[in-house]
Image 1 (cartoon, rainbow, N blue to C red):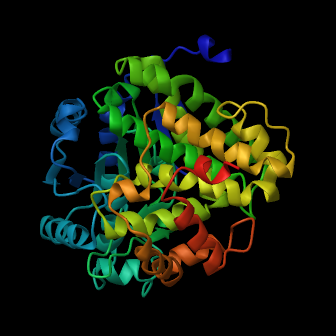
Image 2: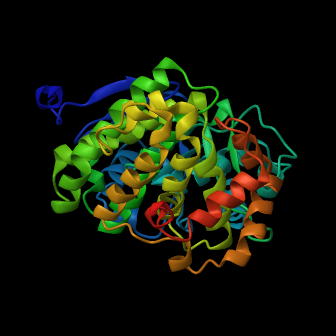
Image 3: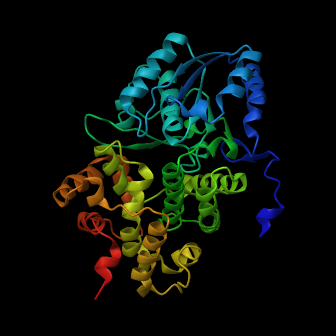
Length: 408
């Protein structure tokens, strides 16, 4: 295949609405980034990250060196957790305002980068708080510049205009999307992902897989979404087993990171629908639940529901993981079971009951879907009518393997 002709150590410059330095060794572009910031008159950065990954990944040493050599001062906020909260965003904003930060450098996966985007908005719009932003009482036009150093291959947030933050008081997890939070520059260095634990490698990649399965089947799907979706699924199916077997395999990490990036570009235009809309309440209620695991538990049932309405599209996109689909609308069960078998073969076997959810939670979860504004908006893009009964059915089916309900 064509992948073998690519020198993964040659840094590519990929331009979307963001400029992305992509390839093994791309972290060394941080010196060029620092020089560019200086030219823009930026000499104070708020660094937004989690407790340790920015150091364990190897990203921090060259970053710290570049900032020091270019006389860029910084403060670190390292309180971002998986499923970051409005409290963390507000706390980081206070630090950034005291420091008079002129830009935000977010280092990590989706959680630090999404939080960093949100912080950048509030540092520019100082009369509002994070809940105002995520409860849609405020629509920003401006934000401080965001630089993203991406440490996972899942969210695509380094290439898109979205951010997700949880509101603990309401146990909701809304998403926002504004042009002002496209990262100015992002760094995608596959070498920074080799220390990801096995479960995180799985879950972030499943997130990317969901992005394209949804983006190619929304009501706004485009030919570009089809192209990117097919390629992302092909690359994930081919290289995820290699990364799981050998975490240091840089070729595998390269193409998984590329798949996640193009998935982010795909849904940046087309948006998402059922799987993300229904997952956000799961990890909103249980912040310890990995986003990708929540998606994995829901995905087979979602495919079963929507396949008939997008059968020709999904048959092509899913071919690398569910071979033999013909595009017949009657293949919904085969497609759903095939996806579930692929996930189970990777070791992702949990269903909602395994993660502590009970069937009596379905009404509460369904209410969250329809009362969280951003999630209701996703449902409008679903390829079938997204009423409460459909949402409840997807949740109910996700308590056990879909193959169980297919027997007989």
